[in-house]
Amino acid sequence: MDTIVAISTALGEGAISIVRLSGKDAINIVNSIFTRDLKKAESHKVLYGYIKDKEEIVDEVLVTVMKGPKSYTMEDIVEISCHGGIATTKKILEVILLKGARLAEKGEFTKRAYLNGRIDLIEAEGINELLNSDSELNRKVSINKVSGKLSSLIKKFKDNLLNIISDIAVNIDYPEYTDIYVTTNENIKNEVDYIEKSLTDILKNSVDGEIIKTGIKTAIIGRPNVGKSSILNRLLDYDKAIVTNIPGTTRDLVEGSILIDGVTFNLIDTAGIRETDDIVEKHGVNKSLEQIEEANLVILVLNNNEEITDYDKDLIEKSKNKKRIIVVNKTDLENKLDISNLNLENVIYINTIEQDKVDILKEKIIELFNLGALNSSDLMILTNARQINLAKEALEILKDVKIALNNNDPIDLIEIDLKNIYEKLSEMLGEGSKLDVIDRVFERFCVGK
Image (cartoon, rainbow, N blue to C red; front, side, top):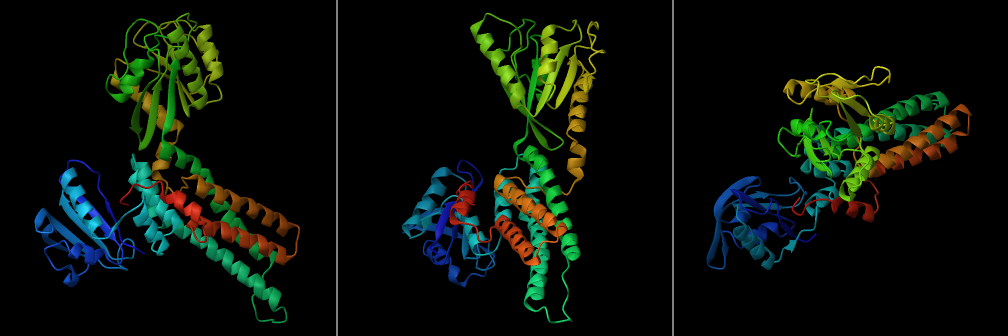
């Protein structure tokens, strides 16, 4: 492979920038512009010196040489740690490109690690997810992939299947031998049950994985002036939304994000829902109603200081099939609201004057999404469509195998289905994946990783 180069740190003002090269000429290229002899350098040692462009000193740097195969890409890698500045970093990159290196494509360093057999595709996807982690739970899920824990589990399934397939092949090809292990439907069923249960659990947890990865879209809805914007501001801990006593102040969506127990909640304060002749406000009301359908969580706010209205009841009906918390707000004021006959679940009573009252809402969210259990689980989770679809396909074939076993179908037909499952699991790891699938995975990376 040719030698690639990229800036591996965010380009801008900072203490340090890193320019990284990988490939057979990486050491020679940097050696030609460095004031120390890299050809005699020990692997994984740091050398101090200067990068030069002909006779001009470009920067004072630290250079690290990592000789393959003991490197990230399993090729020779050289990393130049220079002063963090746009002009300096770009100049070093320019000098290296003139010496014959090629600018790396998105994710090409990790792609080489995968193509050279250092990591599998699940681990590669985990690396990109780790780079984009914006919460502690997201980091934990990603590191389970990067460290190979999820891959090891998939490989275990493959090994179990391979043992069954091998035993079936021996029984079919050499039926006359009496000293070989006899494969029965019962033996196969036990292994199939184990893999089916494990894959089912992983897929079930993938719903949590989507929540961890993308966050929970949370719509705060209600009539005008029930305190939606005050609740948003309290949750965010700063004044994001304008709060007045005038109904209809919020005419468009106001958004913000918070972390609750390691999960991102994307909060949307919606326009108050009511009949109105104001064109702008009417548009805001329509957008608010759309948010009910799109949200993962609906926080429906009612006013403790007012009797329940038909609009309140309409919103209760519209959001009944959503994961929902009913917030009775303004408990610091006289109670005029009676919802005791509506048989509602997940009702809490708060006001935005006292912070501990708003904390009740956070506690309810933790309870509703079982975030405590999520934090304590081992987080073996699939978090992208490619992995999830392959796991679902494998699971469907497993179900067919169980039906075939119960019907005492011929063992050689069952063997075909077991091989198909084996191939689906191999695809999850990236073994035998098509080039376009591989390209699609790595084009989501940043340049330099």
